[in-house]
Image 1 (cartoon, rainbow, N blue to C red):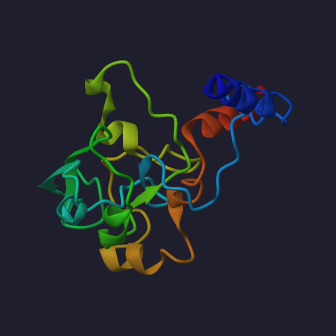
Image 2 (image 1 turned 45 degrees about the horizontal axis):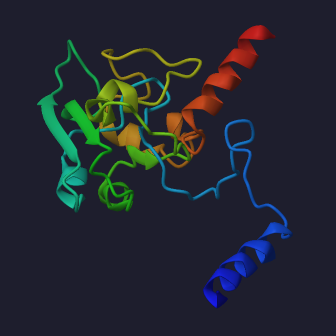
Length: 189
C-alpha cells in the first residue's frame, strides 16, 4: 500500500508544476549560432564551387559518412578555380555524428555547417545528401557552373580575396526553410 501512495505522490507533485512543453512545429526553437546542423558546400561570389575535391573531409570523418570523388577541371568545363573539383560529393546523415571535423579539415572553407536540424526522412536512402542538395544556392550575380573564372586569372585571386569577399558562405548559418521563406518573401515584394 505504501508503494501505491508513493507513486501517486510523485504524480500529484508534478500535476501542479508549470508545463515545459515546446510548441514545436508552430514555433521552432531558437538555436545557438554555432549549432552543428546540416552541411553546406559554399560558392565563390561568381558561382564557382569552393570545393576542390581534395577529399580531406572524407579522411577526417570518424564515422566514414562522407564520400568525395574528385575530377580535373578543364578550360571548357570549370567548376572550381583550382585544378580539381568534386565530381561526386555525398554525406550520409544516417552515419554523421555532427562532430565538425570535416569542416576543420577543409582547406578552402568550402564545407560549413548550417543551423538546419530537420533531417528526418521516411527512407534511409533519403538521408544520403548529394552534391546538388548540399551546394549553397546561387545568389544574385552568381552564374551556374561550369563557366570561366570571373574574379581573376588564378586560384590565388579567388582564395586571396576570401576574407573580404566570402561569397555564398554568408547565410550558411541559416536553415534551408529560412532561406526559402526569405526567397518567397522577396518574390512577393
